[in-house]
Image: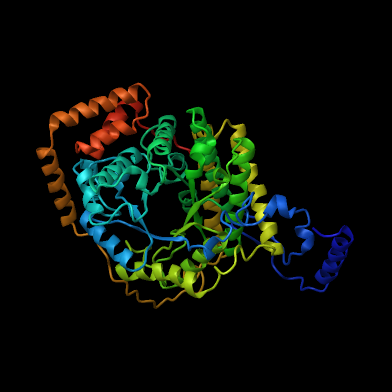
Length: 553
């Protein structure tokens, strides 16, 4: 980028500058243990080729953004992850958020639903509707989206192992509204691999879990063209304790697995890849997060082009959703979380996200209150409309530090990806416990730094308020919710056509044993009001369940 003689002159002047600098300035690293220099100069990024490494927004390798005009053309989609109690209660929260300017819905399901249990299963006792909305049958999904036209709003659903069932219910609701599937837009998380790595709400073993992911990708490619069939998720990996480079590496490795398996299924990469999406966490280290997002875009584009032979630019786009960090929120001095969320959200915007969820300041205590979730939404709206950071595309490009850090994060992430490739891919790496151990070790090292005050957490290990009196209005799900859900489920089971349910469940089992794409069979089951748990039980019979081995003695 610069003439070699100029670079040598800069290096010499920097050395002279450093000799006059204070000698007691302590060394610093970021979350990925990358040492951070005191200053950066053109010498640190002189190896960069603008066309090959950065390029223009909307041009390969998309480091500076996948769209030419980015937010000048349209702002990112503003979502709030929402769900609690019954479908009716969550429906009211969605309508409230839409009236306040939210531009996309994001469904949080309760833990029994995430794990594939019906609300009347004994294991669900006390958990129904507590940390998300309870969905047992198509009727719940119909009530969840009552009076919300599914051709006018996009919906993101955070569900993984039970994806085929919840997705099929959504499609059935659209049909009931008179909306054809080709008009339905949204995203289903559907990332089975990250469950084994981090979130641990897996049901089936890795191979059939990935098979179900590919079923959804194949079905959407052919029948629901506006739908994103998988959101390859680094968020949960980061929340489990991973560093930024681990989050990036493990997420992309998961994505490479899905792409290769879909190609093995017989689909052309340029047919299905444009609808793939990714999902990252925005944490506290502001510049590291911006650099991570930029590096991710460049890495994904290069993998799609060079490893998989993609020719369509849209196949190389890394479209991603971002959520601010839940694990970074503190119960102590909770108002400070508003500041944390603002900085995290800003890093996502400057990093070029397509969709953003901002956490609420009270989430270390409870499900978000209406006031807290409104502040979280307003945070996005203020960034979009008052800060003017959207006026130009990739405004931090050209910063010596940002460009050096983008390059360094990619370099470190590639070391992890190469190790995983050498193990035979992510499925084999998971079976060996490799990413799980790496994350556990990183979480342990971080906690040691907090305990030793090497990492300062305001209100936790520094700047504490010993006389703090918390005045957080408590938001609690009424225990009557569970009773109401059980009554509705009982009515459904009593009034449905039992013969039809059994016939469709048997057809699903036969198709699963034949290793067919199961989505059409699941659609038939949910339309007959088979329950989530009944369908999952059929899949368990064929696939079995996964029991994770202990990683540490």
